[in-house]
Image (cartoon, rainbow, N blue to C red; front, side, top):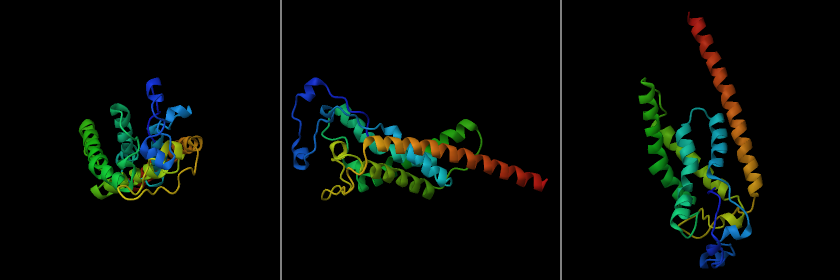
Amino acid sequence: MAVSVIRSNTRQAASAFTPRAKARGISADLSMKGDTMPFTPFHIGPALLIYSLLLFIDPFALIFGSTFPDLEGFAYFITNGTTPHGPLHSIIGATLIALITATPTSIIAWKIIENASQKKIRAPSLKITVASALLGAYSHIFLDSLLPKIFYGDVNLAWPFAYWTPLLDAVTPEQMYLFCTASFIAGTIIILIRTRNKKISNNNVQDNQN
C-alpha cells in the first residue's frame, strides 16, 4: 500500500486517464476522486501478526519484505513516474525485492544489533531469513491485490505476463485499514504473552537445574 496520493492542481488538470489506464477503465489521477491510499507502514500490522504466530521466523526480514515493495511507490512520487504499483507488485518482483534487498538488509540489521550489544546474538539462519523476506513480500502484494481497482488496478501479479489480479475490489480501504490495525494490536498482544511465557518457562528450567 503506497503512501497517500497528493497531486497539484496542474496535474489534476491533466488527462484523467493514461493509455494504460484507459484500457482498463482505471483513473490515473487518484486525487481527482478525493481519496487517499493506505500508508505503507500499515503493512507492518499483518507482518507483526504473522511473526506472533511464527516466532521462529526472522522479524526484520519479514517486516522489510512486507514494506519494501512500496519503494517503487516512493520512486513514483519523486520521479513523476507512470504508476505506483509496477513490477515490484508482482510475484516475480516481490520475489526479487525479498532476495535482493530485504534479506541482505535483515542480515545487516542483526549484525548492527550484535555489535551494539557487544555480545553474540543467535540470528536466524539464512534459510529462515530468506523465507521470512519472501513471506513478507508476498503478503504485501496479496493485500494490495484485494483493494479497489480505482487505486490498485495497476497491480499485475503476473507481470511481465498477461494482466492477472483476480481479487481486486474484494475489500475497501477502510476495511483494510481496520484489518491492518487489528493485526498490529493482536500481534503485539500475542508476542508479549508468548515472550512472557517463554521467560517464565526458562526461569523454571533454571530453577530445576539449581
